[in-house]
Amino acid sequence: MALSWSGSLTTPLQKGGVAMNEECRRWRQTLHEWLDGDADEETALLAQAHWQTCPDCQRVVAEWQSIGEWLVDALPSKVSPQWERRWHQRRQTLSSPILPWQGLAVSWLLTIVGCVAAIQLVDWSLTSFAQRLSVWLTSAVSFPTVPAEWVRQVWDWLLRSV
Image 1 (cartoon, rainbow, N blue to C red):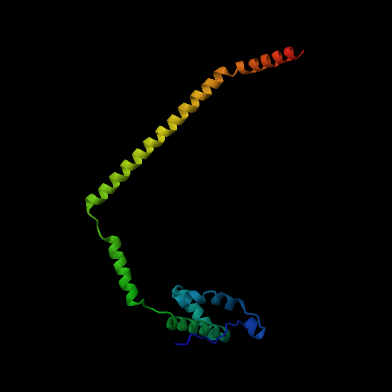
Image 2: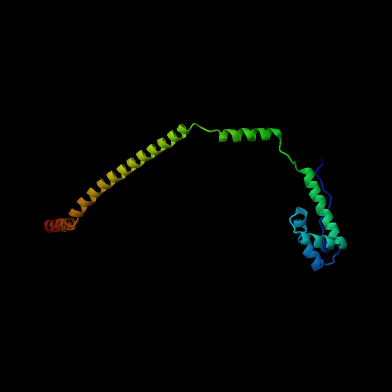
């Protein structure tokens, strides 16, 4: 099947330079709803009444209807049997039940591993914190004497050099 379409989608403005009136604009806005079957009954009847009396709108409606027919012919409506078979196989493998105790065992195993990892992490964090705390406390206790010691050493050096 050849996939070609030779129609053109020209509006009256493009075709003859004549401005489209408000009624044409109004009903052309409902064209796609009408083609899709989504327009309510009253709107569809009023739009069809206009399209039957307006030659420019008749041409546009005919063009869009031919595009719709071309798309119906061009696009496959069914999927291939091979794809259907693979899809059903995939769904069966995903929905195949595992034994109830297997799922429970996996969840318990993951819970235990998570708890052990959390305990180990807390242990490492507390150990590291305790070591840093002892260093900080040692330096905090001796810190006030450090500047005095520096001053004493500088004073001794000055006295020796004089």
